[in-house]
Amino acid sequence: MKTADYFKFIHIDEYSVTPKYLQLSDSIIEAMEEGLLVKNDILPSINELSCVLEISRDTAEKGYKYLKNKGVILSVPGKGYYIHNTEFKKKIKIFLLFNKLSVHKKIIYDSFVEALGDDALIDFYIYNNDFSIFKKLIQNKRTEYSHYVILPHFVEGGEDAHQIINTIPTDKLILLDKKVNGICGSYSAVYEDFEKDIFGALTEAKEALTKYDTIKLIFPKKSYFPSEIINGFRRFCQQYAFSHFIIHDLKQEQIESGTVYINLMEDDLVLLMEIISNSDLILGIDVGIISYNETPLKKFLLNGITTISTDFKMMGTMAAEIILSNRKQNHQAPFRLTLRPSL
Image (cartoon, rainbow, N blue to C red; front, side):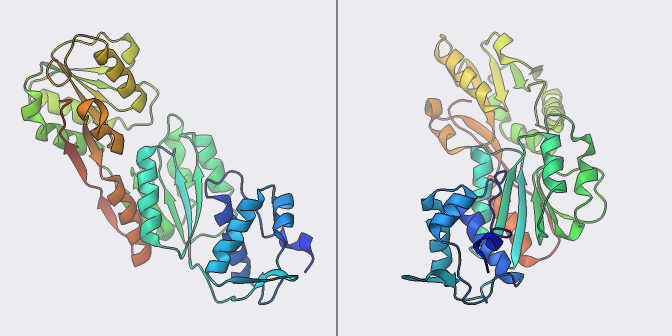
């Protein structure tokens, strides 16, 4: 086979978040599965890979080293790298699509990958809460996958998301974090019940909240967070007679004593901490903070920030277990209150 022919199936997708060395190794494994590469075929040199694919020599070498450790390829001085074992296959091929890559989304990804093990091929994409990118990535998928794992959150334009998702066979579909109305058929999901979750978490925190008069939810006008969070927040405050408000822009807010602030966005948490630290108000006594979504740092910030959060590690593990069991399943992810001194 001519060197140029290899690059018809050995390729790098610049839009994918999957590390390039894994894209390289996975495309070689796919080519073997399709019979495009057979035993003893000589592969392009590291220099050729680096030049044609526009990747570093270290990346090319890391991809070959990964395959070598799996026993797929071998190298001989003067001959280069060649296919040694064509029996190695990754039967699980996953199209993984996240709205963004944040600290808690990385927790989902890491637990998902760890639970699947080494025998899964994952093409990982980010659409930055942009529906047009979401649509393009799904419509332009070049590979037939065994599973499509999608986390559907949009700042705007997501009303037609179900139409795009409906192009995916439901037996291969797994929705993460949020269900989408209008999807036809039975599919798998690991999801949050946003209204129920925040209502339950605030109810659990009710005793700590009683020393405050007012609860304010910081919910930016342009946000990918579901409106069900507002519904659950209002239901709790009305049921337990708390004065309550929705704030769209924290920069316009005068921080007041006797108030608990619930932030959704990390930028608002930073601003809250800055304002309180520069004031005479005492956090956990005069004002309180509850932060949505647990991250490792929040246990240390200002002696500890109270959080209400899905168990993101469990969400990733549950999604992987659905794939490994090869059965349709629906699980509501655990949602927890973690009380710390900020409340």
